[in-house]
Image 1 (tube, one colour):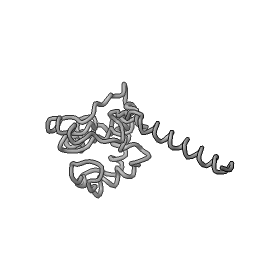
Image 2 (cartoon, one colour; image 1 turned 90 degrees about the vertical axis):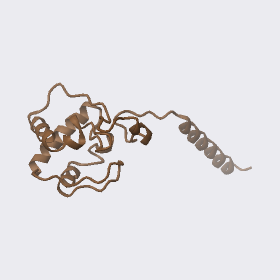
Image 3 (tube, helix red, strand yellow; image 1 turned 180 degrees about the horizontal axis):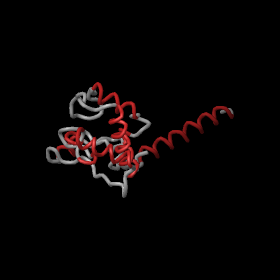
Image 4 (cartoon, helix red, strand yellow; image 1 turned 90 degrees about the horizontal axis):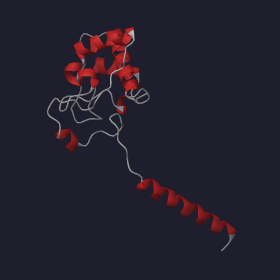
Length: 154
């Protein structure tokens, strides 16, 4: 066997070893992970129960405080107190699915304005939200982002 064949064989064996090692690693799921709770885990929750536990910041910025009031008035009925979600109703916004690099602030603006087809969670489509301006949604997003950061979602 020539040196090139040994080199290719060695790289193949090393790659196979790494793949097996990674496959054998346990998967860790935190409340804010991109992995959604299993349907059976959701079925263990009471209808309307919070889906995730949310740690609250010691203090909110003035903008986030305004956003919290707007969130409580327009969003909490579905997304739950402190954006923890409600089983059978709407998903938690304090979840890695909604981190800034996956759902930008503009995604929140569009969701409020146009609604959203269900694509991450089994709760059905989100309708547009009446009575919120772009500025209102900016404040709501400030609130949600501060909650996310407090819960390790950046």
